[in-house]
Length: 349
Image (cartoon, rainbow, N blue to C red; front, side):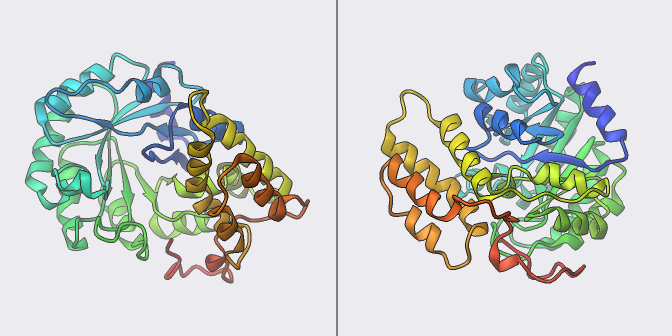
């Protein structure tokens, strides 16, 4: 079965679809392989291919597709606003084992949106319409979109939904924040629910899914066909299997401190190439720990200590101080470990 046929088959199944979100400089070939070791997502989305008039396919991103280590479908994501270049790139990507072509309409990085790409395009719905129309005509495999709900005004989202429907996209992933809200505001799950109700294609919810219980509540209130998880998977690579277990009525198993410590070691090993200096790799690991440490201990001491190490030995000594034990940890950010409720307001990181 081809990758795009497998993707279309997944869209028909009853269980929620689970996507690993694309994260620049994180979700590369090695990270995909590591996530797969812990159960992994159903579908993986590449870091975005930057598309311009003279761009070529980035070899390190293409490796995730041509040497896909997960055994699951891979979606190739593009970012840009040049229609001929986007069409050319999409057609090039179709010659590789991709399940779908995805257009990024949500990246909140200023270096991107100032060029009217990613989330910057949300300021120009008419241009989005032209881009989607051209890509829908050019792409013969599933064509999907990942979007935010507006640039700085969520009211534009209701004007975007008919554009998505008109251009017959095969799936829409909605990050429930505007570009201006970046990652710190409350996630507007009501907007995702409106998209799921309005569109004939499947809608996937994205934004702050941090546990199996929270995943179930997001699915219930949005009516989404699935979930896309990014930073929550960095913190907790077990999250995909935990969600599956809850969906099947099985107990959710939380990793012990030593299992988390082993994951950190695997993360260090899988992201450290032979040419990477020790100091650079330690700095890279601090980036990951900004997410993971939030669910390890509540005072901030762990993250405080991690931020001050400079060697591999000191890094793992600090990790061992807090994780060399057999106690299970839910890996939910401590400020979100609230009583169970269907009211998701305020759960925003």
